Length: 256
Image (tube, rainbow, N blue to C red; front, side):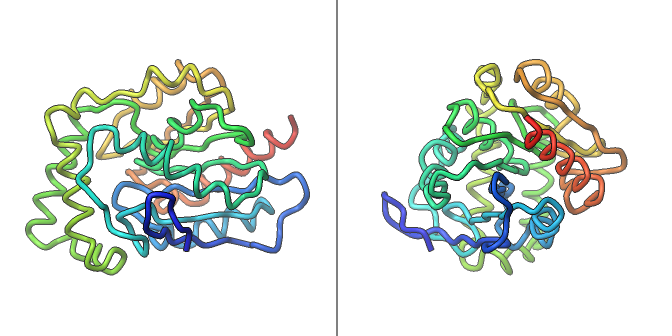
């Protein structure tokens, strides 16, 4: 467990802690808005085995095995995870170079973090990241909230325990707040100096191709890929395609 400066502990785990060739970056995995380390399933271990990299996964405050949220969220919650919490976890790397792999909220956090141009960051991979709010996003969250109210998403309690109601409410209520409809991080994209690989499923129920186009056109070193017949979770729905895309991206980073 990592002790946070502001109090409380975050759960984390290493992947292939004793492996990794010299010069290989550490892969830091950032989970989605209702996710945690366990919900990545075996994908991080498979990616680390394929690339020879070490990995670091952790549960953000409010999720999984980490401490509950202390207060309600503001429209700046993703910035706080990116600029206040994540750097504390990265101290575990002891200055080693790293690549951030972020899914959904985790992808947005990765881009915010990268725009700060932290030392040691070699690249960013995002899956289903948002850089602005779309109506399809809000519609998907409304559907999820209705399903949760009907008891159809109670399986989340296996991962978040007695924090489940709190974290689901924080996620849904924040995104559906009228003020959050104007949330937008496109202004940060030109400051992302490292290479970016942005992935999205063609059937993503929370975002459209406009998210990819915004990243590709505004982040200087970005490339994108739309995965056919895929929804919001490419690493679970199209794991082989995602493993191949990220592995190729990491090889190119190593060649520079």
